Image: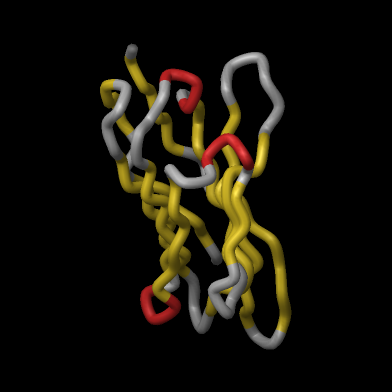
Length: 119
């Protein structure tokens, strides 16, 4: 059974930093393209950052220059370093990824981790 588990969320003051982690687990897996999304109350789920298997990254305009996505393929883990946090970054952050297992590719979601930025 493949699982994506996020960690690292919490409460931080505006201007502070947090580092989110998303660890993929399962027998014989490897991670392909991985994506961080976020969803604020009453809002839709929006893409924050994406990283390909080769390390090519894309960011939402709202986080460019403040957030950095990275990955450790050996650990099947993706990270989101969030700096200069703003109250509008408050949301549940979800990890999404394409996971390779037994020669196949399937998409999975984590359960999310809450990030709250106080002003």
